[in-house]
Length: 304
Image (cartoon, one colour):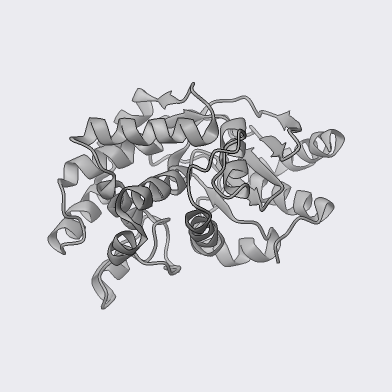
């Protein structure tokens, strides 16, 4: 496995040149576009890693997976999905065109920005600070990583430039989808996206989901049903409007983020974390996807 990962990193690093780092959030533009790293954790306690696996980056949209689990724990499945759907949107992650044109009004799924803002609004707490701290502690627990913390520079960059997300938040408030304070929901959302992680952190998230919501000590933190819902949405919506093609090429429940991360789940076997900040036109890590495709082919670990 270790030799395989080393070889894949060297082979696919060249592909990073075909993409670009995210620039619409100024702080993300500082990433090295040629970085490429991978971390693999399996149920036998083995750890394999290669490339730029130890570089810190912000979790961005991978946090939507974490927030969704916490929102369901806080409110129940029925309430959460009364406010946000379960279907692919077919639109870019930051689009809100269908919020106005769809007869149902609520966001199509929790993995696009509009749906994620609604989910963040459901996290319980006295104020935005309390809500975010609860999410951060939950994230630490399920990844068994107490070092996680907010990147304040990225948070400020997100908040200052997130005008489209802010517009979506207020539109959703006007439509009665968000019931609480919009600015609180946006603060939680911007902050959750701005948590610093490494490829190992998100591999641990993948392993948590692979083990159906259990920690390494066997503690059941999230029910098997909730993790099944989350993994299904990762398959159908986790790679934005490229989710169908990704399912064919890679075939694993996965979620990407514009910070360069991909978390992938091999059910009952392993969690995979990728760092590859050079993105394709859909906002997905371009070399990370090609690396995962070949890795899954070699390991024959696709779920389809």
